[in-house]
Image (tube, rainbow, N blue to C red; front, side, top):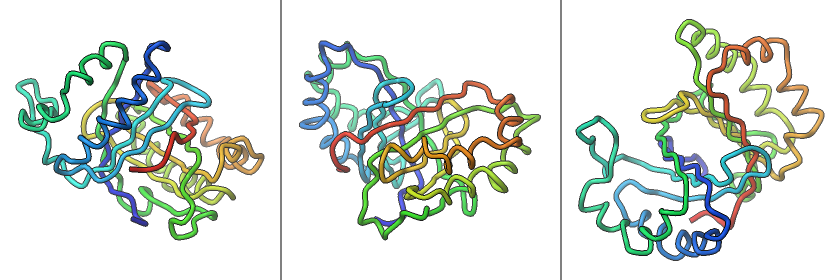
Length: 226
């Protein structure tokens, strides 16, 4: 797939150190295969933080929310027949030892929702690292925030050497409100002088003061994409 699915479920979590090995085994051997058997699930990735928190991120690409329904409180929950598939005894044991947050995002439309970077080679190179940035913005600043992203920030960052692609999303459930992800050939790209020059502009510094619940994490890939 050379154009990623526009709908994603992002699971960020920390795991008790004594349970990390068991969690890894459960995730690879049982959890991901079961999720990918459900309607709408297209692919799964897992990432570990090199800088920032939480320590882990699971990223699921979806082509629909057919596996979900709205609960009485309005939240997206797995339909009972699908929850029965993934809520195994092994899952119950492992889940007691993690702290997790789940959010669903819809990719924004072009030109401010997706861009290939200079390192894009048709999908032959899989990203080794990414920065995932999430933030909310007060309504009175939202118009300027989106104008800054469209006119300066997104095109600047996605033009940096070593960038494979950039994507930008808005939450359909969960927080923070906006998310951007930039994929790299390796984890050195966001520390390069070119990246820092593109990211640290006067307009960026002004907008950053208006962020609420700002979360910036540099991740390395764990394993391949399923």
